[in-house]
Length: 333
Ligand SMILES: Cc1cc2nc3c(=O)[nH]c(=O)nc-3n(C[C@H](O)[C@H](O)[C@H](O)COP(=O)(O)O)c2cc1C
Image (cartoon, rainbow, N blue to C red; front, side):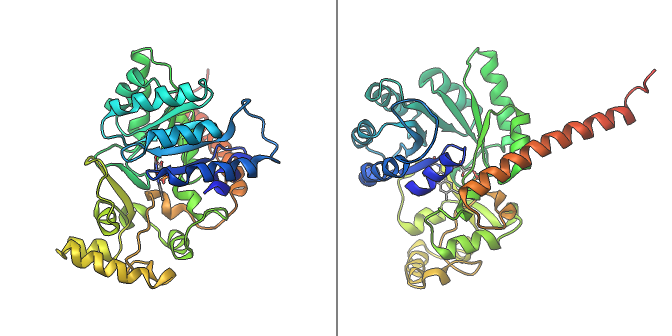
């Protein structure tokens, strides 16, 4: 995972290393990132690695996190899915203390209520607003970024809470970035697009599936079944995961028992890359933007292309809006 995070930051984005909930490898992953970054020409804040680390707080060990972060402080720590939002307070306090505030705190939330509570209590440096289209885990009940972002921006402004927001969920290319910026986001976080990235360390079967699937609103589903199959049963109740609807999902829908489904999943694991696909059973966590992901590219190519396309989309929109104004607005003079 370190190579992808490093490649993202080298290309002018800001790469996050996914620590997940099992932090036993975090120390080694950060050391690998530090070594990859030694020769990198990145201008960022002094004394921190120019990458972030993402935690799933519901299952992570804060002591392990602090120990690893003290050795190799990252520029940001990303929090997600605590059991209670108040659980984030010791995380923010101890990580800030461990690095003298050099490691900035990002929190990913999925509703206006969560955003306001976190803004007032944890006081993060950045809020990531995760909409319902997002790949992987998210609140089972949530809005898409199209309404979530502006409502949160307004709610924060009303309370004089000045925290930049980042939009996440369903954004796979430049037009989505342009839309997110228009909604009031300062930037975007993308997961699904980077599954089809040269530096992503995922199975070929998974990556092929990301390229194959279209029409993400229909071909992906939010479900808890993929956690059940893999025996990851401790996620907070409000969360489920978005992935491509496959045979396991359809069988669960038709009433197959969890035990039988899990056994079939285990057998499927033996088939390697053949286990993915609409009739396969391997999990393809991905967002609704999957249909826009058509090619494997390097992190640098993806970030450059998306930045250029976002600028073009914004310019086109302004152009089109002005034309309409002339056509439908008051005639000049
Ligand atoms: C395969 C996959 C794994 C993810 N794992 C995590 C995770 O460990 N922690 C986290 O905070 N978010 C995770 N996410 C969600 C992202 O933070 C983000 O909300 C999402 O990728 C944005 O939507 P998109 O996938 O449509 O770009 C994951 C997303 C995907 C696709």
